[in-house]
Length: 253
Image (cartoon, rainbow, N blue to C red):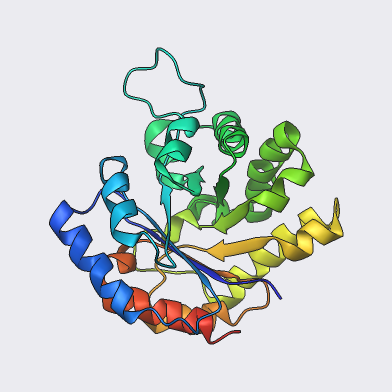
């Protein structure tokens, strides 16, 4: 059975004080009996602080973004090797906000994915369609294209060391989420694409759902056969909400 994961993407939120308060409360709420993985993805400037706060706790720390380049003359960028040096274990690549707001195409995402792997961290590859693409029945074509760009560069074996997050763009930060059945359909399709190349890797691959996940809908989403947890946005900024989402994931075990 695949081990569920609940990951909190804090986006551009937080202060040193609020981050510490949130994590301290989470540490008190997390149960040692939960057979799940928990991770948080703070903004770059708070990663070191967060790592210190959660040291020795069952909370992994990752980054929300990374440069595709090796260390060098790239002002304002952060290399994968630097994140590894800090103690990060995971990095989000291909989030729809990076694709849409900062023009990161499939090729750039594939290079970032490869950079994270080369630094011996776990890439969390985000894929997903816009509302227009869903209405045009292009969901499968879009997520297949986004996945294929990574596979062409890094190969199917790379997914043995990665996580996929399906995030329908129309459900991110909108309060509107895919129904459990819609999420399961896309997760099953993605798993099938991987299994067609390597059944073992496809069966073991964790595919998270992201898109307005909250305590009220987490259990139903996580009950789906191919939904292995969630990449949580706004709800991860509330200790109560995040704890209840984690508990919903743990209840599936």
